[in-house]
Length: 106
Image 1 (cartoon, rainbow, N blue to C red):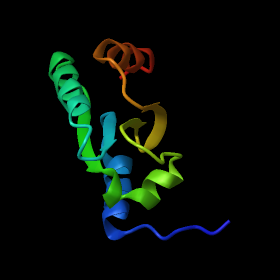
Image 2 (image 1 turned 135 degrees about the horizontal axis):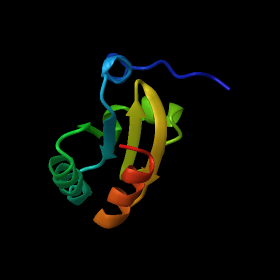
Image 3 (image 1 turned 180 degrees about the horizontal axis):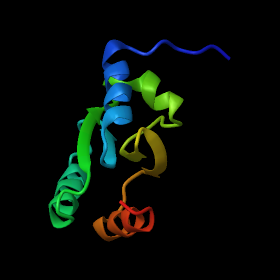
């Protein structure tokens, strides 16, 4: 299996994730899935901004996404101290996203 080189943008994302002290939710999306970002921003505000939300267009970081087992959108990846702790794949209701984030202590 060959390893695909990460782009500079993808390396910047990895550096950000590993250096950020708070949990980070990475929302991978394509242009046709904007509604989930509204849900994340609402949950973010409702949780006193305990974590950071980063929206990344999937087409801009396909190599990084593939290394994390993501091949489609929408996807939400939750990182703590640079480590992936959970991933939510596909369209989900706001209550399901909130419940899942609470279960992983985000």
